[in-house]
Length: 77
Image (cartoon, rainbow, N blue to C red):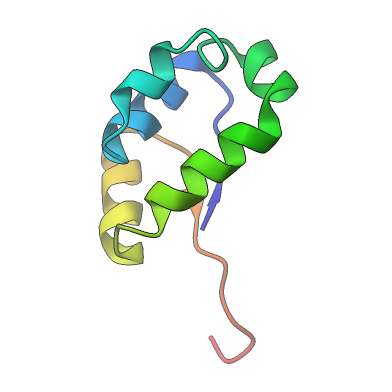
């Protein structure tokens, strides 16, 4: 899965989908500039939670909530 979250609202939606809405309001991640500065820790948090949801459900939820997302296919796919 690849996310292209470009706005604070999209980030809030993604965090809600992943079941971690509190992260969207954490001062380290609430604004895009802060997310860029704290990318490594944010990536770790998101990776932990992304793995808890099936790809199909995650895609469906992101599409429904207008979070830009795409499935990264294997060579066979």
